[in-house]
Amino acid sequence: MIRDSVSSFNEAMRFVDNTLPGMSNSAFEGSLGLNRAKELLERLGQPQKKFKSIHIAGTAGKGTTSYMIDALLRSTDSKVGLTLSPYVYNPKERFLLDGEFASDLAIVEAMNKLLPHLRQQIDDGSIPSRFETLFALTMVLFQQAKR
Image (tube, rainbow, N blue to C red; front, side, top):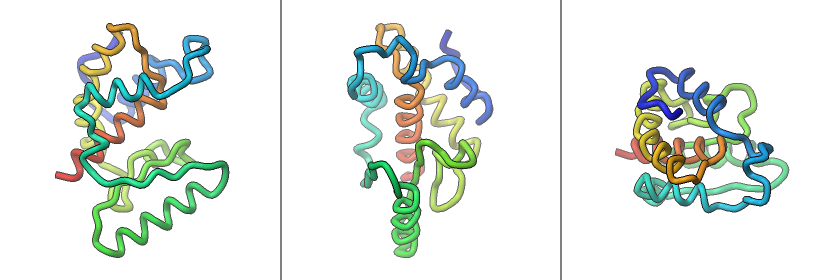
């Protein structure tokens, strides 16, 4: 059951962890790809297209590289959002704005914007994974922070 809203960061993370399947879940066998994530982002109005971004991928050094780019951009007075997956020490590492953890309120607001779209997508039979949902949540958060 998809809830209508959350009222705290911990409640939002419990919802994601306890409601949505992980990629190792049998629900995803044979269904790798970006379709579910793209669908959710489309439902949200393509928040990832509302700001410039850098995507860093690979097997080693992503965190260090990300933090270095974050510091470099902030030194130019740029507004910077950073998300790490997986996080290293704290789940809030997924939600960094200008070098600080995003506020619980900002994350809750982003989650509450995402929930009706997530509910509709699940009702339509396309269940995004935890990672896909957290990525979409982060894109909504970064779009909101840009304002």
